[in-house]
Length: 244
Ligand SMILES: NC(=O)c1ccc[n+]([C@@H]2O[C@H](COP(=O)([O-])OP(=O)(O)OC[C@H]3O[C@@H](n4cnc5c(N)ncnc54)[C@H](OP(=O)(O)O)[C@@H]3O)[C@@H](O)[C@H]2O)c1
Image (cartoon, rainbow, N blue to C red; front, side):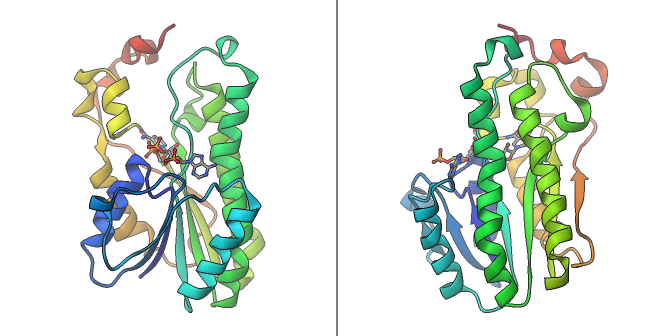
């Protein structure tokens, strides 16, 4: 299994790395802007840090490494984008909305732009992006984040259609809240145990999503599990600390 994990130092990216390192059949390139701590590194994997996905000069290094590292089909998992802390639209400056469009949508755009030609040269590949169930639910106090994720979903579908003739597939996972480190800090403790963990998510990605038939493409796949908080409380009851 050939994996390129972009956003390797995010909370979910680290969980995916741990899961990857437990598998012997994986060849992985872990790409990040901040440096993955040495204790989290797997000796078998290649690491590229200091890569800002919005800077083309740094992306040339990314493309060159992809060409050197893979001679057959590979999967790019895009695990990138600023964390959202609930805030009303009128209290979110345009710089906040811009940062979300940049970190979620434009980073995926630039990764796809640079990786697709390499995928074509090795006979195909797969893109996995992360969206959020907020795109279908349109929750309040999430406009910059949700709008950026809607752009991610559309871009994934565009990639799937534009590159299908080259054996490239693209799918997005629409996530609910995942029990990560930052979610632990910002969401109310009572709800934490009801969230899917980043470890469970990593297993789902590596066992189900990476092995999807290449004909399954252009989809937004939703993940959810029953949660008392979600089904029995309103949005504002679930997120009291989100109110400013
Ligand atoms: N956690 C959840 O509950 C949840 C729910 C729905 C969707 N998701 C999605 O799942 C993905 C991972 O979430 P997470 O909570 O693990 O994220 P996270 O811990 O907040 O990390 C976000 C990562 O994005 C990277 N990044 C931002 N802009 C970048 C740029 N220009 N170039 C390179 N890297 C950049 C950051 O790099 P640095 O390390 O350098 O800052 C950081 O590692 C995101 O797309 C997120 O929206 C998460």
